[in-house]
Amino acid sequence: MQFIDIIILSNAQNESLRKLTMDCLESLISSEDEDAIRFNILVIESANTSPYDFPNCRTLFPKMSFGYNKYMNLGIRKSSSPLVCLCNNDLLFQQGWASAILKAFEETPGLKSASPYCRLNHPARNIPSHSGIKFGYGVRDEISGWCILFKREILKTTGPLDERLTFWYSDNDYAKTLEKYGILHALVTDSFVDHLESQTLAIRSKKERLMMTGGERYYFEYKWGTRSYFSFLNHKRKQFFKSL
Image 1 (cartoon, rainbow, N blue to C red):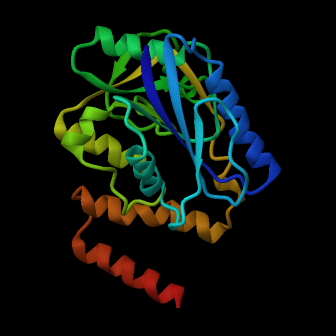
Image 2: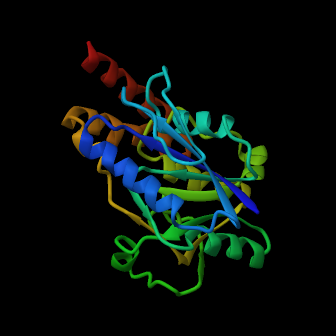
């Protein structure tokens, strides 16, 4: 029996978004034989709604302000399985997705992080399905930021996710961190999880989307050495005065 902690972020502000999370959970639970793989599911819910009543599923309602990495770190702390999967809620899990990744871990020495193949995204990036294991750190190529399964042991090397990134560039930072420490990651093209693309983000205002997307770039570029500290501070100063 393999145990996998599944951490899903949700913001079910309306019935449509709640259904999105429900569909995600239903597809996940039916995707594997529970006698072989047991999912410990933790939904981190931002909206004031009811818990999700599914087998092996807990719902947390954080009192702290939203942050993608902050909420994911909370889920990581509240779970303990040797395998961890970080997920958006706008996903549809296909039969045998986890089995395919576990097989890749078993057959590939040193592989400690992997993403599944998205039939909506990867064909457009000229990556065919059933084309083997693709090693690398390319965001939206090898690293599908909407679904990443890794061995918990890597956190002993990398530390927790960087909570200064509140939404955008979280996957880029994950990729850079793995590359920095030489932790092997791959896209498993026999594992299928389809991403429905930023359904929750679409309900936010234009200002909120800009803050959660473009605003993250300055810190990310400063952290990884492509932007000066002065430029980063200048951006923070402009943000401060805009908020007044």
